[in-house]
Amino acid sequence: MWSNSSRLSRLNCKVLARFSIFLLRQFFLTISRELDDAALIDGCRRLGVLFRILLPLTRPALAVVAIFNFTWAWNEFFTPLIYLNSPKLFPITLGLHRFIGRTEIDIQFLMAMTIISTLIPIAIFFLTQRYFIQGIVITGIKG
Image (cartoon, rainbow, N blue to C red; front, side, top):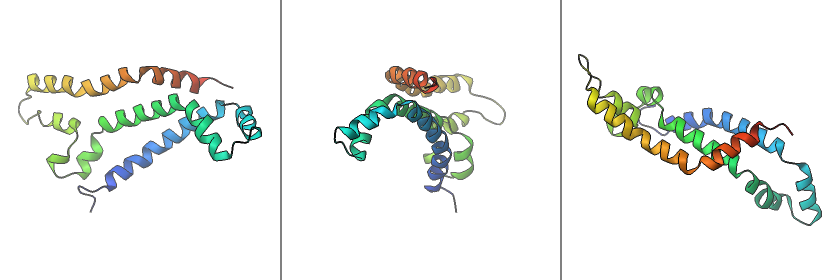
């Protein structure tokens, strides 16, 4: 029933959504309500306030949410192990687990593939490091 289906991704999205909603809520609480009021007085509608003022201010928090969600999905092990049957659909973490045999571990290949599998998350972190650090710092500030 659950094997190789899209329900697996929906299950992960439900868990990730709770953390993302909490983080974004905390970030939105730090944004001053005076910005909304000023935009409304200037004639901007509610949807315009969201897209022209609030979303550009929340870029750091959205980047943090994207980085956390990507990292969690990239490192997922047990959920695909339980629900996926086809090795073609396995994530990298399960692929690395295939280097471990019953009697011996192919340690050279395992370490080489582990280093290769960490290159993408590290590259994404360095490309978005500015937003990540800025989002964490701003989210932790009490208004």
